[in-house]
Image (tube, rainbow, N blue to C red; front, side):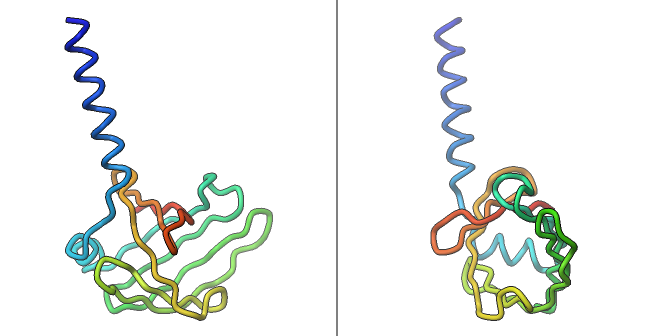
Length: 125
């Protein structure tokens, strides 16, 4: 019985690790964003540096706020487009140049956002 428990526990750990490293596919991103999506965002430390709330509208517009820790909210506007599986966005006033993100599955209705292969933030919806 003990041996079976170890095998089951090992499978669960492997499955959880695989889930955490799987990026959303182009089809999954299209389905996720087809009707628009409201995301709450934070730095990797749960809001120690910033929190945000952004509406990704189905028409490719975005709007929302970002709040640096200890400061007041900054209004955001911009646009987004899918390029394959990546969400590429321009956000005024903080990132007027295009930034492309890869969304990595990190929980139910949660993604770790990677930019240039490095984890940058967490999105929840």
